[in-house]
Length: 402
Image 1 (tube, helix red, strand yellow):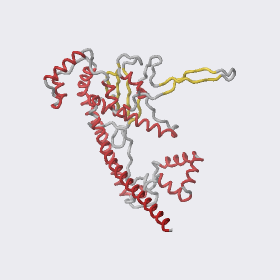
Image 2 (cartoon, rainbow, N blue to C red; image 1 turned 90 degrees about the vertical axis):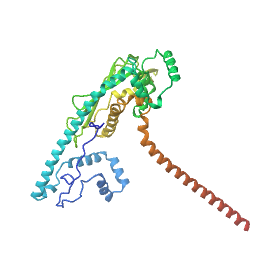
Image 3 (cartoon, rainbow, N blue to C red; image 1 turned 30 degrees about the vertical axis):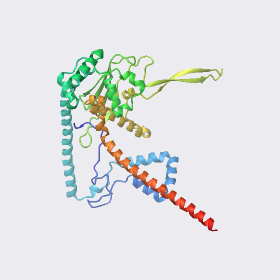
Image 4 (cartoon, one colour; image 1 turned 45 degrees about the vertical axis):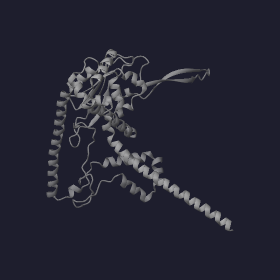
């Protein structure tokens, strides 16, 4: 399935424009580009070496901000190149820009129609997800046809196996559905497994369903449904991913931010914090006491408290927040595009072979190179040892001759 909603930033044209061409007259085929960081470094290197420049910037952080601000103010300004072209050429340039706008309209329409197609088939998937939920939670049993289709030829069982299976079913008749189905599936999904702590597992054992729904505007909501548990009172905990109103370059939807449900934790059951004991001394009496403080800790449930986009005043931490936003968005996409549609494959672990195929191929290549390097190193070591022995032998011989 195509992915019409992506976390993709707008690209910019690289053809000659007022923003990336020189101010003086130049032929249309000029490949001059807008000054970048590399060219700034080259200019600095003419008068300052690297160490001096680094020291200068370290002592003057305001200088870095000033340079960044100056570069930012240049974006969007006309260099005068287009204006210097003959009238007939400028007219043709304007015509091409008009054609490009029509192309952009079609791209936006394409993305909208892809989204509608995705919604159409999601409506067809939904009954299958509901059927899956009833089986997972013990409200229904799979039909013979479903079992036969799921077993496949390699899993056909003979009469003896069926008899043994029937006996086991009688012994396990008290087990309803598939216990810890979603927890097991999540732990097999690499990006999610890294977020789940041992403390989280006790709560996630009560996870009975994960659903997704589209919003009226571009975006989607993930819904986690829980049975009664000792950790929180919420029956469902959701997280909603929103996109910007305007489409990006190429008609793509641009991710904006996410919002999560507030979790109503029961007393002393908040998994996103831990309790630490700390000694405090009274300045007057010099007596000490033990106080307990709560500090944030790693937990899957931090997923429902997503990072917020940086404001204009957060330039110093913008990069860190953007990385966290990208990771947070990717986790949501993994749940939406991988975990929910193929939950049974993640539960059994079969989905891992498709995830790790590319990595294994790369690993094999690197292993071969490492082996070759090790062989070369061993040969070099052997040569060195032989050389050392030769030198020692020669030295001894010279002593004996003397």
